[in-house]
Length: 290
Length: 276
Ligand SMILES: Nc1ncnc2c1ncn2[C@@H]1O[C@H](COP(=O)(O)OP(=O)(O)OP(=O)(O)O)[C@@H](O)[C@H]1O
Ligand SMILES: [Mg+2]
Image 1 (cartoon, each protein chain N blue to C red):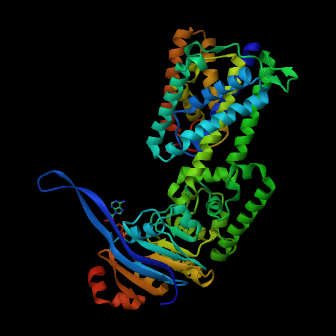
Image 2 (image 1 turned 180 degrees about the horizontal axis):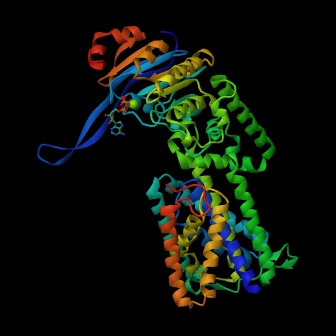
Image 3 (image 1 turned 120 degrees about the horizontal axis):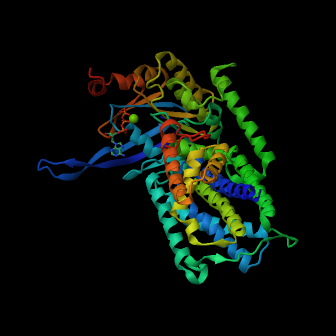
C-alpha cells in the first residue's frame, strides 16, 4: 500500500510541475528548457526556509515560490525580448547556469554531496508532516490547489490574453496589449508554482542534490507536458501520470532497472514522435505547439 | 480641408537589401520606399490611399501604427484635445491612444472563438491582470458580462438580429471562411476605443457579394460612430463609392490628392496605375 501512496505522491509532484509548465508552454507558446532550474531553485529555497529560517510548511512554500519568481523575473525581461528559438536558447542557458551554480557553490549548496536530513516540516507548529500519509495528504492538497488555480487562470481574461500571445502577437499589439508584460506574468507565475513542486519534493525525500534538477529533468518535464497535451488542464495531468507510472509498470513486468531505464527513454521518445505525427496536441491537449 | 486627425510630416523610410553585384559579390543596397512624404488625414472622413503593388502603402500604415520606425519625419496624432507625436511610440501605446488597425492579411486569433475574438479586443483590460481575474471575481464577472453584451450588440447592429456571427460565437475563428474572418476583423475594431481606423485593403480577397456589406460597415464607422477612416484600397469602385478623399502614392510620395473622381481621372494616375 505504501508503494501505491509513494507513486501517488510522485504523481502529485509531477502534476504541479507539468501544470505550471503548461501555462508557459501550452498557453503562451513559450518553449522553456529551464523548468528544472526553477524546480531546483524552489527545492533549494525551501531548504533555506526549513533548515535555516526554521519556517513552518506554509510560509516555507510561500518563501520558495516568491524567491523563485523573483529569480525568474531577473531572466524574464531580457530573454522574453528574444524571439522564438532564441528564447528557447536563453532558457537552456539559464538551466545550465543554475545547475552549475548548484553543483559548484559547495559552501552553500554542498554541491554534488547534496543536502541531507531535511527536517519534516510542521504545520503551524502544531503537527509534523512526516511519514507517507501526511505527505499523501499534503501533496494531494497542493496538487489540487495548483490545478484549481491554473483552471481559474486559464479560464479568465488573463488566460484568454495568453492565448492571444500564443496565436498572434502582432494582432495583440494592434489592440493595445503589452505582450511583453503578459509573457513576464506567464513566466513568473509558472516559475513560482513550479517551486512549490520543488519544496514538496525536498521535504518529502528529505535529501536533494543538483542532479535532480539538471537538463535531463527539464527535458523530462517538457516531455511530460508534450505527451499529456498542452493548452488545457487535463493534458498536463495525464502527462504527469504517464511519466510517473510508466517506469513502475516496466518494473512490474519484471524488467531489471538497467534495461527498464533505457527502455523508458525509448518509450518516451517514441511516444513523442508518434504523437507529433498523429496527434500533435498530445494525448488530451487542446493545442498543437507551433 | 477640414481639421486633420493625422499630420504626416516628411516621413522617409528605406530598407537595406542584400544583392549580388555585377562582380558576383554580396553587397548591401539601400532603397527608399517612402521618400519625404507629407499628408494630412482629415478628421471624421474616409480617406483612401491608393497606389501600385509595392508602392509602400502598408509600410506607411506600419509607420503610423508603430510597427515600423521611420528613418526621419514625424507623425502627429490630433486627439480630441491635444496633439501627440506618435513617431517614437510603441504599437500597443498607439493603439491605446485611439488608433485601430486592420491588417492586410487576417490577423485575428485563429484558436480563439468568435466571441473571444471580440472580448479580447475590448479596450477594458481589467481581468487581464491575473490578480484581478483571480481575486476580484465579482467586478471581473461584471466586466465580462458587459463585454459580452457589447459584442452581442455590435453584431446585431451590423448584421441584424439572429446573425450568423452570434450563432457561431463559440466556433473557433479558424473555422470561419476568409470573408467572414475579414468581417470579424473589421467588426472587432468597434470593441476598442478608437478615433482613427487604419484599414489595409478591407475588401481584398473577399467574395464580391460581401463587398457592399463591407462598405456599409466602413460608412457606419464614420456616420454613426464619428470615427475617422484611413484605408488602403485597390478596388476603385469601393474608393469611388465611400471615400471622401483619395490620395495616390507613387515613388514614395503622395503624387495626387483630391476627391476620388479627381484623382482617378488624373492623367498621371491613370497612366501609372491603371495602364490607361
Ligand atoms: N521589412 C522590410 N524589409 C525590406 N523590405 C521591405 C520590408 N517591408 C516592406 N518592404 C518592401 O517595401 C516595399 C513596399 O511594401 P508595402 O507592403 O508597403 O507595399 P504596398 O504598397 O502595401 O503593396 P501591396 O499593394 O502589394 O500591399 C516592397 O517592395 C517590400 O518588399
Ligand atoms: Mg500592402
